[in-house]
Length: 140
Image (cartoon, rainbow, N blue to C red; front, side, top):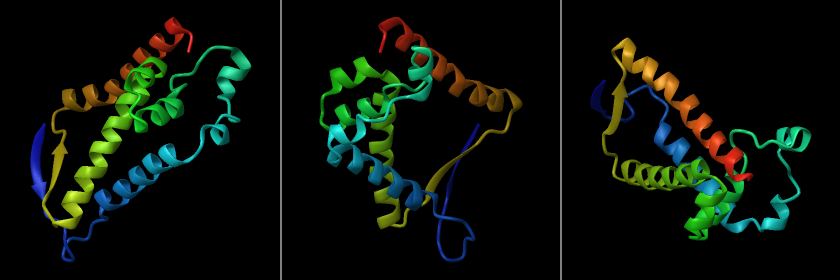
């Protein structure tokens, strides 16, 4: 794994990922904060509706809503993955705001070894499966 800093500017032909994903994250957090719960409660997970079993990501919307209202305990009880993802989203929005406003170099990671690439590829499914086991056990 190799860490490096990359400058962004007019001479670099690259999409400003921090600006795009920072804006998307900000809109998601703002929506979770401002949209009243009854407007989102009409939607039910199709997998959960059909099978009666929660899917890998069931409860993430509710966890986001609780996290942006600082009800951390309830957010983690509903979906630990959703609560952690909300924290990462908020941290990324702050990071993106700082690097875009001050035109700082952007940290990048390059996975050079095959082992590191495989660990990264298996990490997300492992996290989703652990979250699913939690949801199944707690009957969310």
